[in-house]
Length: 569
Image 1 (cartoon, rainbow, N blue to C red):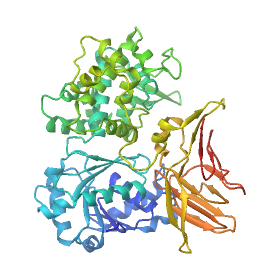
Image 2 (cartoon, rainbow, N blue to C red):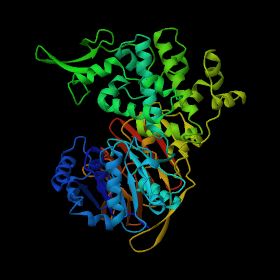
Image 3 (cartoon, rainbow, N blue to C red):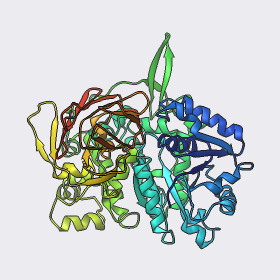
Image 4 (cartoon, helix red, strand yellow):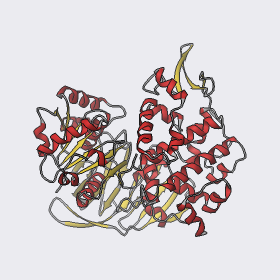
């Protein structure tokens, strides 16, 4: 079975984003809703979206539209049917009944739910249908967020789940993590808990929101939105619903309950229409004073807004976590309280949520843009330091076993969720050169070779090589799957609509997963995101293997057919 035709049902934010990403990957997709005019409006929103959901707007008509009543027959031709409708179990189950009646044998059905357990969604299905049903939890915005969680049960057809995983990894450019059917899966279980800890500890320790966001941000390897800024971005009302779902699904013994109770301040803001960036504001708001826009922050005590100010933490740009949590001031105490609680909670989820600590870290990187996950934080701090810093720390079994081994190095391999040879894995074994003052250089000879077939039917063996072409250093591993296999001379450029590679004889092919031959030049290009528009000029001179890429203010990569050099500014 191959996935060549997809139907997405539900044309809201998530359904539209998924349909657009399928279109980016040149997969025929039909977007259905209750009425055709609803899906047509969604198609228009996709076309006009900022930041753009489409790489090439001229492909917009590759997204077909329709409704679930008159166009139900298209489901019968689909290899994969994705449900992305309202988060109400009974409405979803009614839709599944209709899908099952018309779907073709062996097609895959999935839900994009982020809150409803798989076992509840599939409760009314036969065992045969359950084998083909799973959860595919994309993160928003779909084009730009790398994480995709696939949730399955023991009854699922494992070959089909792996086929779906490989398709989403190779064609949609996702970092796909297979999850157990537990509340919040992996990403949201840890990510939402981390947000709640950061918020409740800030209130308890009487930090203002700018101070909390300054600590729970770049110093911890977390995006600069911090916690209160992220709350505004997601929406206070949406976060409130997410928390209610967790409180309903998690046992009362789970410490998530300690940080997820509704705060009077948040309740008051929502009731007043301050739901975040989509409303009048949230913890932050833009106010006009004397004809100028002023960013204001709320005072957590008196609930009044005041002009926001930048917080000087008096730390180096790249402070170590150990130095940060060892500070004998309110910032150090806050950092330790938050980090220790996140690490302990993440460790408590092994093995009930996942048997691999690595997967939790990857979910936080791919889904929340953290540069390091809880266990990488633990490794950086050192297990001995972590356990002995605070006598009141209640360590769990996972941490206790690590401590008893008396070894600070426990982490092991990176990115075990994928079989691809990625930059994250390469960095652990590559030779590091420090001869460039503005860059770190990694030398690596790839052991992976691929057989690819050119347009003449000839099978050519190329060495797999890696190029990081991401927008900034902080998300290095997001581009770990960008692969170029080069055998001879060619040149190309990226920008405009996707990526164009041009062989010396003038043949050119556009796309993000392209095999191109001409003048003995063969390219195999895959991207960790299906065609993110890279503002980059690629130049490959006449000699075999010389390659350079400049993207914005960063310079990366020269390699030949036998070796790879990574230059990362």
